Length: 143
Image (cartoon, rainbow, N blue to C red; front, side, top):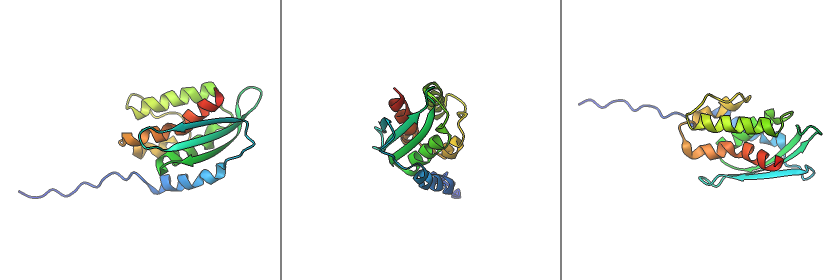
């Protein structure tokens, strides 16, 4: 019997994910932001605090993050933060629902700029809660 060559494991922490995780510095926490939300992953313990400012129509105009999460959670938070300005609670809620369906294998990739970045984590269900942190914290802030 001939041994089969080992199949390479799909890389979870790609250079793109690690790079995006470091880009969270572009969205530093700001104590002056009036709306606050937090989210925590029950699976891995990752946490994210989010501060927001919205205009009169409820659209996000400024945000800051404080993440204590794995690189996957940080990269997802970066994707969220990079595209959140101009969105309102309804848009965030719709995107969150679509994201949850995609992660569960029950829907297409969400139409959220940059979310393809975390596609390598689809097969790692233990990371899915960390991916959802920014959307959950934003909904808490906008409640």
